Image (cartoon, rainbow, N blue to C red; front, side, top):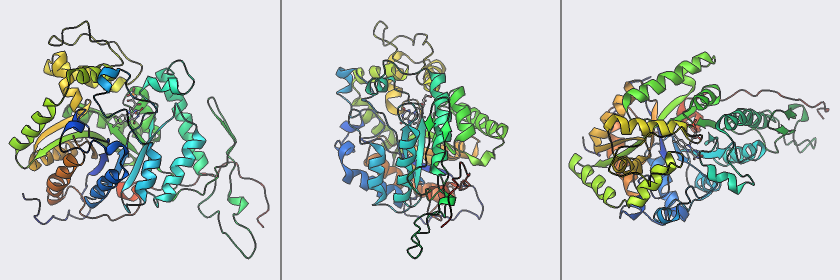
Amino acid sequence: MSATAPAAIAPAGARQMRLGLFLLSTGHHIAGWRHPGSAADMPVSIARYAEIARMAEAACFDMLFLADNNCVPQTDWPAVRRTSRANLFEPIALLSALSMVTDRIGLVATGSTTYSEPYHTARAFGTLDHLSGGRAGWNIVTTSNSNEAWNFGRESHPAHADRYKRAGEFVEVTKGLWDSFTDDAFPRDTESGIYFDATKLGVLNHKGEHFSVRGPLNLARPPQGHPVLVQAGGSEAGRDLAARLAEVIFAVNQALPDAQAFYADIKARLIAHGRDAEAVKVMPGLFPVVGRTRAEAEDRMAELQRLLHPDVGLSLLSFLTGGFDFTPYDVDGPLPELPDTDVGKARLKVIADLAKRENLSIRQLYERIAVSRGHHMVVGSAADVADRMQDWFEGGAADGFNVMPPTFPEGFRDFCQLVVPELQRRGLFRTEYSGRTLREHLGLARPLHLPRGQVALPHA
Ligand SMILES: Cc1cc2nc3c(=O)[nH]c(=O)nc-3n(C[C@H](O)[C@H](O)[C@H](O)COP(=O)(O)O)c2cc1C
């Protein structure tokens, strides 16, 4: 299939996959910034981000997604100085800028429920939704990086269970704040002199275990009602929160059976919570290395792996396993038993299962983790990549994918030019946008306004 062949139109009503671009500065391969296909200045270049955002929109992606940490993620300086990860724009500011150079693509930023307050979050994401004409999404994280504690006046990261308890209340308060006004609360009637109708205002007056928030939010209800709620924690508590509140779930799965089990588990939890199974889109991460031929893709992958410094690989493995110290162990020996972590439980399990399933040494494991941090990887031609995506999509493992190119811009351009047309030819992906908002792209309902704390003021 050539990239220029006409795209087939999917039969009416056919299920199509959702595609998100996981936009991680210089690329998902940890050594990607050293590759000639990467722009090493990307982390602080709005021009580069704008180029990628326009490319993703031209390819009809549902959304751009920015992960975030309120810290330099790792403090192992000899290794960290060899990565681009200590340099990161604040995501809402960046997406606000990108909203001005795009029209259709969804804009999803990460916001922590542990190191932020609902009022700030409601205001920032509500503003992004207005700026973008209804394209905002919030990736709700309880924060996987314990280093953030030190930037917010805390000695240590709160316990996993406590973080998730706070997250549930945080999201409810944020939703309540977005509903401070009904959709039609602002008549801006110059004749009567009434700017907003006070009967359409609700003062939240929330007093809970973690938050005391009076409200109202100083912002009209967002165009989407609420920005799309995304969740990415895979532990028991994470899945439960997702099934109660989320509309998109970013998953991390290595193998198809694990992805199928995760997908079935989430859909069952949704039903148990009285929600429609279609109300949440499950989008596992996918790390694609694509070439015009399989051999070319394999060469590219080998080229990237040659750029990986061993210190960087080992340091990343330690970070993703909750700070486990591998220095006393032989890197060419087997992976020791890893203790449970309070940080990213789901990721730890994916990594430990991968090492066990493929009998990997510590070195082999970090070489794999440095690539995609535990997400599924596929190296091959456009048809190989599309086959894998189709297998997962039609095999009950995914509603779409969070695409994680190894490098930017080259790795993503290859995906857009080679894989997207192949998916379109198979009728698996849209050839043009039919909606305007992120909810419309994803097929998600606009939330009804829930009145809370109406105030007793005269109408005029
Ligand atoms: C695709 C993806 C993106 C994530 N992005 C972030 C992020 O930007 N910031 C963060 O603190 N955690 C991030 N996480 C981590 C989770 O949201 C979650 O906090 C972590 O996995 C711990 O939760 P768990 O123990 O339920 O897995 C991400 C996870 C996934 C799968």
